[in-house]
Length: 586
Image (cartoon, rainbow, N blue to C red):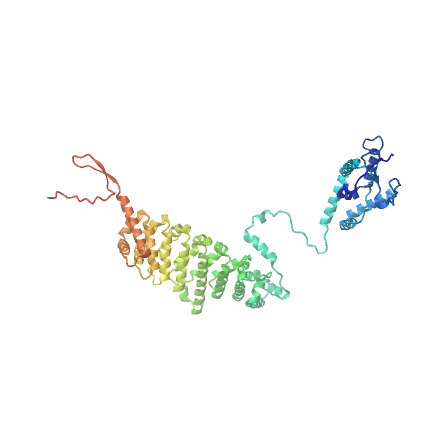
């Protein structure tokens, strides 16, 4: 085979990535490439001047001149065996193959390729065509060997990815959530996240919890274990860690929900749970435990043990500050609150001892403060107003308690009227609520009277409630009296605004004018220039509204026919200031 007369290929013209890929060529493929190169380098070939000569690596030959022979250091069969062993080792041990490959490809180390392009000297005219030809030849070889190199690369990457290193954590589950998991409520998801983040108890605490939850444990041991947990929760430094320890809160709630639990066991457990509810960091956490709301509701509704009821009410009042929506939506807790409020429904407090009476009154005051906090939130106002058990209990006990509790009760109902969507429901669906407000207008307690007037002012802003309110017994007369209270400006302004809102309905014109003292009070306040201010303006506005409805009723067009004259249209809506007499003598 004749060698081409001149061939010059620059080393920089060969892409490094193509040379690196040559390491993956099998011996059989190398033989095919050698035969193809020999056949294309014959004198009869038209591409003989552009094909490169395939020679051994420069590391295996000595550069003695352009015409000197180049003998390889190792035979072809030896190189084939080395490549086969290297390929097998890469498939068996991916990490070793990666380290060997990175070590052999470090800068300054020649690559052990099966074949290398040997640069020779030639004229500048043929250098560019030679470089172009060499690139095409390498691309052609890469196309033939693409399948094998791709399979090896994929296998190697898969082995490296699946190789587990020492101390490596197993990857999390990547499969999609099940149908039950996708349909679970946000509270359930938070519960699952909470239970997975709890810390494990130590051995002594674990033994105490086992004694509490074990049904075969004797009563004395269980009482002592509950007392030990209660003692631990008394210290402020233990309250946050214990609430985040697995099994502490569930053990307490299990005892509180058990039917056969004794009074002593329940007392100690509910006190321990109350201590855990004191820190603000635990308000959201404790309520997320599955049995916590049920345990609190059961012990609030139980009227046999006053101390247990009071502790349960106090614990619930803490948790309600961070769980407003969940507490209002929980029917068990709402029913338990109504039971606590109606403690004196049949005069039960009169038959109790002085000590028990104080505890029950304290529990009722605790629930009232809790409801006052909930009623101040706009998001839960609608749900709370439609909780029939609570609203009916508030209406029932209003005016029948001590002064502080009675003020809170009327304030809760007033806060419910602040949401316009509640006006219709409170007016038509809550019996005796409006009547209760009317009774408190003339109350001796100024705060109760002010809250009652605020409630009627809010309810009268809704158009479909004005007629119902105006027809309520003693409402207009009580509001009219309150409008004349100059010593209490807040009550006077609220009463005048209520009258103004009721006057916006034309059907209330007759009712208001027939109420004794209503029109006279408005005229007196409107003509009192010494006081002036907002009260005088609202009174004038109310009179103007009533006059507008009177003028509207009288502004009709009549046909007045005079004797001998043609009929003409007379607008009687205008004042004529004309006097008509009957056969008067001039």
